[in-house]
Length: 450
Ligand SMILES: Nc1ncnc2c1ncn2[C@@H]1O[C@H](COP(=O)(O)OP(=O)(O)OP(=O)(O)O)[C@@H](O)[C@H]1O
Ligand SMILES: [Mg+2]
Ligand SMILES: [Zn+2]
Image 1: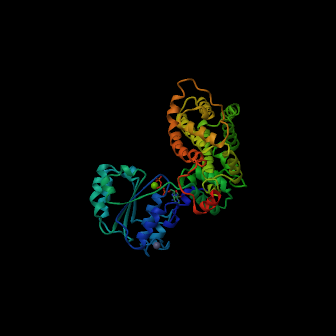
Image 2: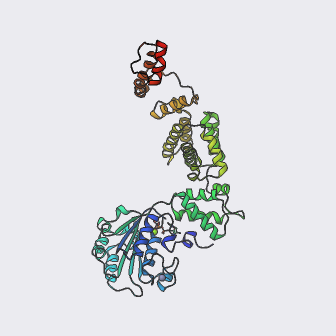
Image 3: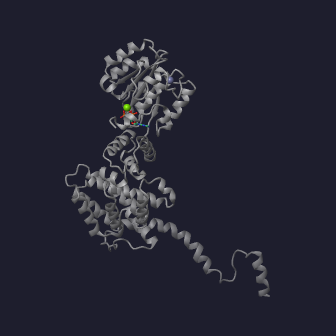
């Protein structure tokens, strides 16, 4: 395997572009009905298929059988424009990062007037379009607005807001999205199969997760891991180790210690994290991910949660039992704390100290009088479980904020409860119940009275 996977597996037709159906389907319909616009602007995050789609579009409109969403793959143009093909003289790619100046766009403007050499259209793909200078864009405006019949433009960019509004308003805009983890995982599975590499789905889930929605990143990571893998292929533990993910056992222990409020155990984990040379930020990120999984398991009790989690079955079982140690409010607050802690850890000079302070805050949910802390205490009371730490009798000024917050729900409940229950219970013994009893009861009551 000498070529990078993301180059080997560049899609060659719209149907092969994964996770961007909201773009590829309308484009396919436009191609089928021969309603291709003269200029497109494809935008979105890195590595999600913009350049690939621009090339596919060029290939689809120039196919001899086309315009078609399904290029034949055999005509001259299709062969030239195949992924990793030699390229076509009539499809001109301009990298605006290096050729976005006014001289370049003026040259483009002049050449655009000549008819295509061998194809139906002359297609200009302007990649990294946000790098075209304002003067460069101005030189293009007229051409993009009313190009000759044989010219098509496709702009691609990660930063659509930097593209001149005058260009944006003359193009059809399509926004690419980050690809969901599940879809990335399926895509990776397909690539592994094609490469003849055996891979554990849970291992692929880890890779997909680390790629954060970028198909190119996912394939890059996959390539590196395959290169470093043994005969057993990609296993979950091996991939976790190679990606430098925190050992799941450490995460299990952290979560259990938080649930039971065992400070010594929790600080012991931190000790091991740091001693083992783990990056505190990585640990906090993985802990946040774990809390997220527990939140999903708590919020969606049935089997549906499995579709949203990317963990192997054994880990999900362990997480299910961990989730029972928390209320949703506790998990959500812990996640907030870890997320804040992560921000502080960025570029921190004493990450260990910050991690320990974070852990200390995680141990103290029940004694905090923020709205989230109160919600947790109410949750605990309702479940009939004792808080992890006894609520300290607070010195005089402390009760004031909670008291001002607490009466609202109490007052709301009381007026409703009082008139219904006590009033009815007080009246039956009295001689005349105001509403007449139902007919059946009245009939039985009359003989008794006479
Ligand atoms: N939606 C996708 N479906 C299938 N493969 C994809 C997709 N997006 C990206 N890839 C893979 O990633 C590689 C790079 O994709 P592409 O060049 O189209 O991304 P891009 O959106 O233009 O990224 P950048 O913003 O970095 O230029 C492709 O060769 C392909 O292997
Ligand atoms: Mg690109
Ligand atoms: Zn063709």
